[in-house]
Structure formats: structure tokens, C-alpha cells
Amino acid sequence: MRSGADLTEGTAEKLAALDAVVAALAHAARRQILMTIHFRGSASAGEIAGRFAHKWPTTTRHLRVLEDAGLVQQERKGRSRVYSVDKSRLALVSEWLGWFER
Image (cartoon, rainbow, N blue to C red; front, side):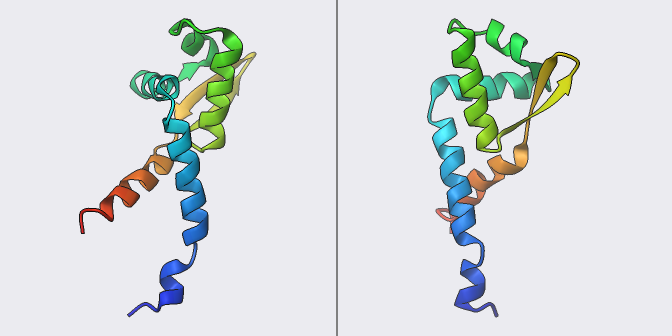
């Protein structure tokens, strides 16, 4: 049987990560960017920006928020940055929602 201390080990870090993920997903444009990258498999910053009506700096700010939350990762390919989804961070949301099923 696990002790109370074992159950709370890493909880603060998980909650901070969950807060970052939820905050990143709170904006409709970021959710759309995340879905775009997911369904394409990966996408360059230019490809992502081309799908939205807002300006380039706005797109890069949204990408930075998603990256800081750990939802996307980037890889440099020549002069481009190619983004892909990091699904492990999305698992935090599933885990949190799972508490309400018990």
C-alpha cells in the first residue's frame, strides 16, 4: 500500500504542467493550430501561419505558448522550423479527467 507521501510525490510538478497545458488550450487559435499540426503529422511555421487570418507574429506567439506548455516540439530543417505534437503532455489532461470517473 502506498503512503500519503508517495501519492503526493511529483503532484506539484504535475499540477503545474497541467496548468500550463490547460492555459495553452484555453485559446481557440491554439487549439486549431494543435489540430492542424496533428492531422498533418507535422507542419512548418509558414504552413501553419498560412492557414490563419492573423499576422505572423501572432502565430509565432501561439506556437511559443504551445511549445512552452510542452504540447508541440520543433525541429529545425534548413531555414524552417517544423512542428509536431507531443501527445505525452495531452495525457495529463486525460489523467486529470480520469479522477472524475472514479
